[in-house]
Image (tube, rainbow over all chains, first blue to last red; front, side):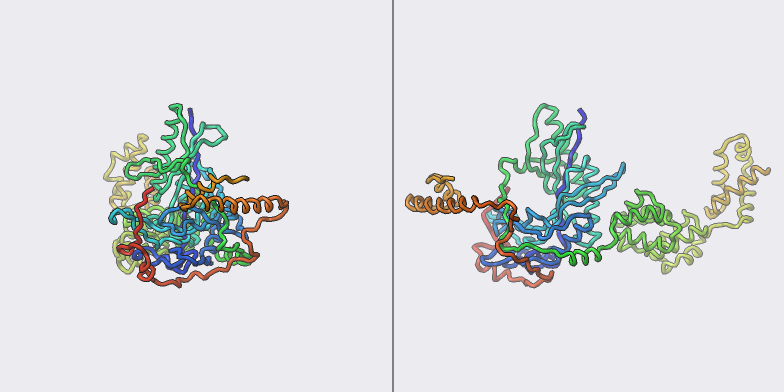
Length: 480
Length: 95
């Protein structure tokens, strides 16, 4: 039987506020335990939460960026469960009337473009951290993280492969950084994924029983976990069994998922509106202000790159993978508007490869966009060949000669020979010295032509303009 | 809904409340009265009435995003039963 995988994702994005969602404690990462846990975070008796405007603003920005409905009033609810890293005995979250409802994200996989619908995105507080190392048989609790603002972003079960799930997670990751609401740091837990996975016979229109996989803190783990889990469910079904609805944990070391808790012992969270928090009103004026403050979004830029610069949808999607990369491209192409494809190729090729190798991001690229544009304009006007340009780029990367493109070309003798008479001289020499290749060419061997071009390039140390060499060689061979 | 004395004892048990036979009897009467009140309220026709999420018709005030609480760990931990290396210690729980 042919199986279809159905995936929905829940992503927790930590909002980049200075202070917590309901208290004035700092959210800075890596502080000494409990030095950023205020009386509200500790849930001492009599304290009251006061909502952080910055958290609401970030959630609204997200909603606007995905074309969602902003609910006003939006209400907070208590989600009740008992765990020592949650001292109140409930998490303040949202149930009915979440701040963001609906919306869409367009994803790009290698095969196609696809629209993924979002169900909702709601504000909530993070819990603290339990350390189970040995404290004389006790657990240690650090409440620094308690009360950190999170936006839980829930998708519809619209993805059909691990590749689509990864593309969606990456799009979302790029978007939250793009609009500046989350730093996206996955190692520090600022962007965490849970995946709901089920399988069904291809062509079926009912969903299979799903399992939720928790704790996927990298795109690679997300991909591996979904693949393992789908395979596991298919094996069960093909053996005539049935899948049990449960929460599973991904074990990155073993590359497998295992049961965390089954549905029978799932918590009943007893959601109810939090009487400590009043309904939140978000006025149309406020929404307008936030909309105006949004930067041009990746989707709009992708479309513009295709229509304005004639780039392929794939190139446009790679270049808008992050705002920094896209800004770098914009700053380069602005100086060379007719050479967008050349700029795109260099940024996606040479620059990205170098940055990857050096484990750097584009914001700290040692070659500034204007310097790259200066180099590419020398490729465009024929001063240097594409190959020589890479040598110049090496020097620029190393910071040689104050990154003066023309000075480097001059000093390294990389100027392309574009003078017809100089090339003709070389061509004549090569033809005289390679009579056998000429004979081969005349007898119909096209390969011999390439060999002759190669000889001319060699004789000029690669500096002859290859297009001119081709033309002159053709002329001479047909004229003789 | 009719509440039995066994229901009361079970709720007390779940809430870790030690309750005597007399107290259970008294709680049964009080709880039953509360149920009656709820039944009366539920009989009211509320179709066409938008549910309120809060008893008062006012909206939430917002705080500026500013760090206003400084480190008071020593003070807060002075009342904790057990602390070590800045952590609050609790009976071990592993899910």
